[in-house]
Image (cartoon, rainbow, N blue to C red; front, top):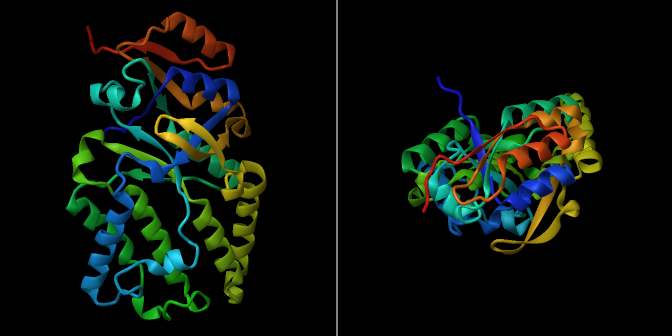
Length: 298
């Protein structure tokens, strides 16, 4: 099977910021180009569970919102095509930006090794069959007979995982009209992460003690070192208005950070000199191939 490569389209200004500031921005996905995707997940996910006749939330995830579990999920979008005209037009600064080839597997591997943490990552699901397959793969792991109703204090671990799977689906379901983007998402929900941690730590079962210690260590990494919780969010003026974001400090990855970027493609209308850009990248320790887009635009 051919290995999938991941590209992020953005402006030259953003690339400059990533390199000089040593950070990646994960922006609020509530401001996605598909404003219906969060509601879409509710409909898709719950219609399947309703068919089982065992939906503990009566067909609506109101329990999440009523208990403050609905928060902002932050993410970074990628595609498997590094030189695509529609991507340049939508996300590549009107063809004047860059396409950054990231090594996502390396990023996740280093985060896991150093901090016992990794972001959620997955391909966006567009068709009904893709969504149904995703839901079924998650739901089959849950024994709904163990649910004790909607009161949080009575939730079992399976109920907690139900919320986790729902959260993942919410980030990865989009309308089929967007299928041409072939999007992949790296994402993280600070609100859910806090909720999961607090709820897990309150469970009284002695057999969870070892898992609690491991989770506590990981949580401390996220809160005190990575600093990507809700309290750490910032705001900036982006192409779709003022938007919140969280940052991943690349310096925390050590020297391996310079291996995260494998290639940079200059947009069809990008005026940047390739040699000058390569010199800039080398100055900051990045040995990266730089090339022009093969798309010819008059």
